[in-house]
Length: 168
Image (cartoon, rainbow, N blue to C red; front, side):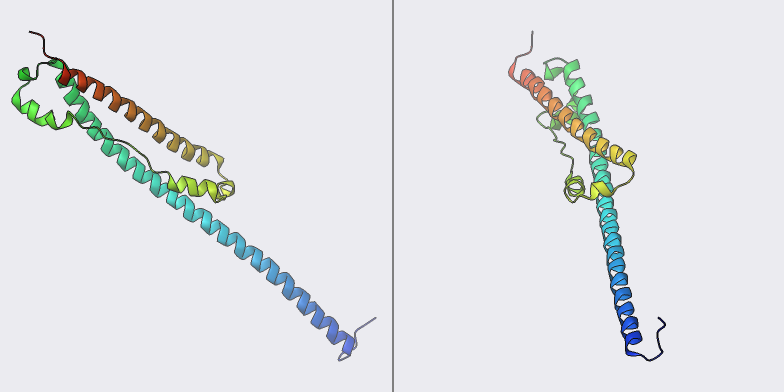
């Protein structure tokens, strides 16, 4: 049956159609806005992860420079045995500050925790990228454990150097 122009039923059908279309557009728009918002949140968290990894890399570079200098000093002390009197004064001055010093390496992982706990990790489609990110954090943790081991060994060596007398 054709709608008569101006008839009450035709007007109601149009109004109902407009309402239905409005509801569909609202739901579709709302869903689209939610997806965009979620994607923006994931991008923001991933930026935080990148910034955190860069900060950890800078910290690692500084630590490696310190470790290299520390290692040179410890090798010098080992080379002269337990007799500090044999070490040239300039070398002793250069490395003396290292004797009782250790440095800890604690990488930050707050952004990674946010990525995991927010559920954003499921929204990252690039599994290779996720594996690289998780691998970086795992390597940083392993390096931290190696640093702890180095510090323990250094402390033991320093205890031997300081608390035993040189052989005649």
